[in-house]
Amino acid sequence: MKRGAERMIEGFLDGVPLAMLAVDHHARIIGANAAARSLFGEDLLDRPFVTVLRHPAVVEAVDWVIDPTRNPAPTPEPTLGTPAEGVANLRANIRADGRNLFAEMTVSPLPDILGQGAMIAIVDQSEIEESEQVRRDFVANVSHELKTPLTAMMGFIETLRGPARDDARARDRFLDIMEREAGRMNRLVSDLLSLSRVQADERRRPSSEVDLPMMLRGVLVTLGQAIESAGITLETSGLEGAQRIPGDPDQLVQVFQNLIENAVKYGGGGQYLGVTLRRINYEPTLRGPAWAIDVSDKGEGIDEIHLPRLTERFYRVDTHRSREQGGTGLGLAIVKHIVNRHRGRLKIVSHKGQGSQFTVILPESHNRA
Image (cartoon, rainbow, N blue to C red; front, side):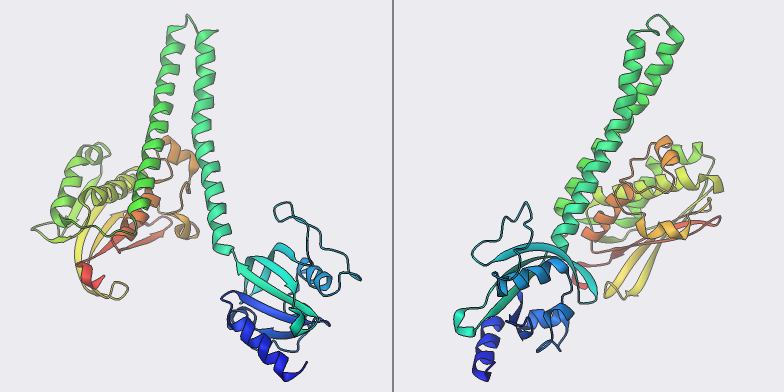
């Protein structure tokens, strides 16, 4: 191809924000803009297209656009329609930039002035696809979490209307179970609403302040009966005096109630609960001073393989035990989003048989976080 035509192609492609490649009638690459080079590397020109993007459906579309008389039209996808007017649209998982991408691509003929060939526009839809998958998983999990107790309750109602109609002992036992299951569903719905509110506010920094030691003392007073009933020894450090930091009081109470309740429920076997408040002179990730709150137990601990996923919605280390304890599988997800809203950090350290420590690190001031 003449140098003038190459310059025209380069100028045309560079003006497009999407990743774009141009190939000649031999399906060799004759143009690539900066976005395409960032995906596939710098050394693209004069390479066969198939060595850059190896997906069979994409290669088939390129061949058809270059010469529709000699190559079959690509198989249409239901959502994108049949190829028309020499243009093929497709979705495919491709390998680019050292990772797998879910991309939408449009393959169209080169303008006549530039000769015979094709242009390939590539739109990375990976984040959208991942978000959609998260949404699908979330709906499936919520449906499962609600359907299980509802199914059990419907079975008990049917039994109470039939065989157990006049059985007082069975009636009382079934009603107790139904009350427990209804309570779990109510907690689940409450946590779902709470998670929704937290996520809606996550990008907006808190405009109020909270006295951190006073707030922690209040949470421990609220949970004092549960801690005492579990036979747990409580040790605290650094909770004296006052220290005000930016924060939403209600949300931070929710964070530490959740973490302390978890320590009582799942770490109670160690008969120990530690709550420590300490100042960090300089926290690198927050680029300034911060306050760390450690909630520790000496229970059975958590296998390290589970730690990266603990804050995922509905993820449970022990599903049966969590449900028996009244857990919804959303508590740590709510904690994570609240801490993120406060521009803080959540750290989890645990070893099987050695207990767990959950640390919340909060910036001392907005201008440093």
